[in-house]
Image (cartoon, rainbow, N blue to C red; front, top):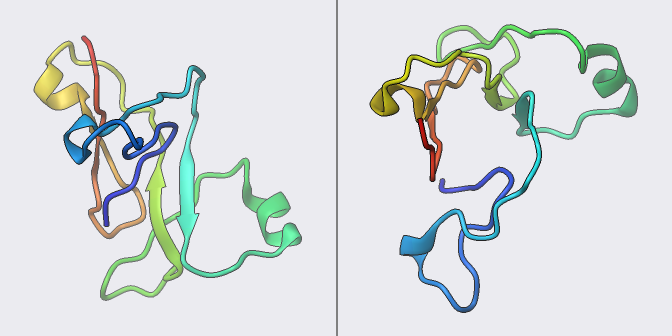
Length: 101
């Protein structure tokens, strides 16, 4: 799956090669994508806590699709810093398009 957080994948005037068009000018602390509908209570009780991810062998939070914390720090090496680690336990790491060290 190809998706974008805080930007468009493409616009009608751009091709797929222009991924990241229309970027959000804001800060994102973390992003969680659930593969199952969450209730208002489930969201309200857990939005401010880190959560553990599962994996293909451990069904803990098995409906958590991706979990990006955006808190890995800065190493000043673009090849490292442009990766967004997935904490869901399923290794769906992201890539920061347009990252500048």
